[in-house]
Image (cartoon, rainbow, N blue to C red; front, side):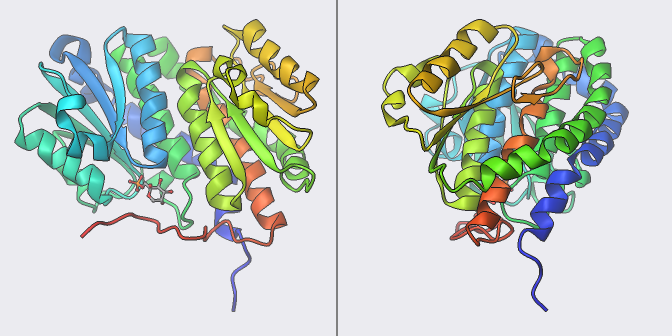
Length: 344
Ligand code: F1P
């Protein structure tokens, strides 16, 4: 009996609010041990790492952690840490935060093993499968089973692990107010998907759209990269991410009436970022304004800007999902992709 195309991906996208709530319970129980890691007091820098989706997660996590803690926080693909340590690490004691859905990705394991062998500092791992190698490798290991998935392209795993890194940044910055406010995100996420599922289907299934550009700056740049990857992985569609202001410096030459420019717009730079969308609309592009007070996709979460970024993910995931189905593809089984990249 053949399984309905996209059955798992649909379930995994729509069940994210519950997965977030369960992950926040885990983080609540680990609160003290997370606080005691105290990067400000013990490390010269924090490096986040992963591969593919989890590398883009690391980009977003490092940006927010630096914003909230004021410490040097950087992100690298695990392969760069493994194969080019001199151009990745500087002297001093490092906290390495390795993120992986599977806990089995060879590049991430090799990067962590080399980091420990070279005594560069301490290792914190975040993953979804406690029985896998990565979950046993770190000085500290956090496991989020609610992020486990059956489909290949990450959705629930990504958002759950990303939310966990948001919690780390709150606690390391001594912002228990922000940490406590994370508890409001599951309900906001649920409402967000209920309010925008039909818009996501309309845009995803629109055959007149041929190319998708995802704009995100600051802590949202990594999320723009991830949503662009979702569009590629699930629907094999031309899709690219850019920082908002960078889009005018050349990439806008690709704008046509068949383009959709999706703005992961902030509140802090609403004027400048909205102006980019306005300029692209003037060039004939379709635009989508996604924000707390978004014109097209609106969160209305009431949660502080610093910690509500996970809400930028669900509607973008749904657009990619719907486009995949509209092209007769199976979003659960993207072309050429394996769930885990294992190297011999
Ligand atoms: C990372 C990853 C996924 C990608 C594919 C292959 O896996 O690159 O992002 O979608 O499934 O693996 P992980 O280390 O986060 O398990």
